[in-house]
Amino acid sequence: MMVILAGAAGALVAGCLGWGLYRRPARAAAAPEGSGSRRRAQPQEAALAEPSKGNAGEVLQAGLHALALLQGTGSARTTGAQDDALLGAVAAGLEAQDWSTRHLPRRPQLLPQLIQTVNDSDASARSMASIIGQDAVLTGNLLRIANSPAYRLQAKPVDSLQRAVTLVGTDGIRQIISAVLVQPVMQLHSEAFPQFGSVVWEHALLASRAAADHARLVTHEDGFAAQWMGLTQGLGAALVMRHLLDAAHQQAVVPSPTVASALLDAWTLPVASRIAAAWELPPSVHEALLREADATGGGLAASLCFARAAASASLLCRHGRISQAQALALLEQLQGTQAHALQWIWRRLHGRAVETLEADEWAGG
Image (cartoon, rainbow, N blue to C red; front, side):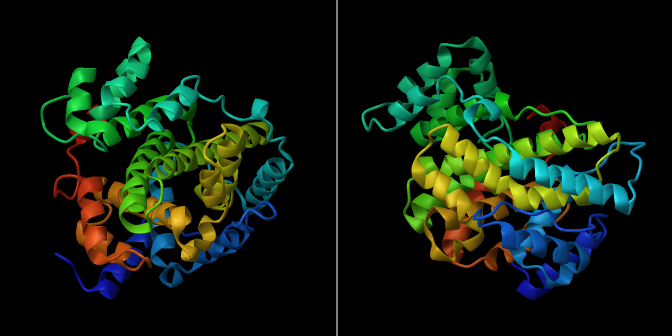
């Protein structure tokens, strides 16, 4: 199944050139001091200009951005000066932002109850599902997520909480309940980038699953904390995009994919770490989000780094941008995950051995 590693990576980079994203931004989006992401803002610029020099994680991240940042029909192109002004305004706004809880997404009301239940070794999947059963809207969201490509295990739809619990088990129901609590906070509509909200949400779901599996199997860390890292980094991306859209509206311009990509690359994890702290998630989640750029030390940061890349690879396969062979070849370049572990996580993450999902199945998820 595997192709020659260098050939697959080269083929994907060549494909990236056709995605229309590789355009040098006017300047990099400055990341906050001490965030661990400052050094990642400059490589983003280099990757946009010279994709052949990007590592596997950067190539997959660029592919995710290309998918999420497809512009709507009739979107006007910005000038270099407009890009400079918008990039500077958003970066300055994020740097100066008051990150107290009143300026961050509201913590889901059921989150403390969920965390308490998860920490109870005697709690069953049914008792956790009963948390969601208290709310009809959340119950509907849980069933919708259980039927999404990220979680659906068989052709027959999941039509009840009882069936969801039976099919996905305790760990699975924990993941789905966490996603249900986060999903309303992540809702985002953008006329400039119509696919952004759905792509980032699906990426967060996939990253959540991959991080939990990687933490349990490879880094031997807390799977629940790893799962929340995957969800929280998606929240960070959504919040960065909201800041960008607000600034673009004030300047009466349509943001370009290049500016959006640079800001997302520099600010997603620093913003996510602030959300984790404000929501009182486990301290290990906050710390790992801050040091993901230096994942060589292992631990949850390494699981997050792998999960973000694996989720991007799965999404690009599902949308027909790359093959599974290319995806696996790129993921093999990431350090710290043995081949057998990679294959096992990929099978659980990507599901059936297909290159893409049927259009109606994707829309129905």
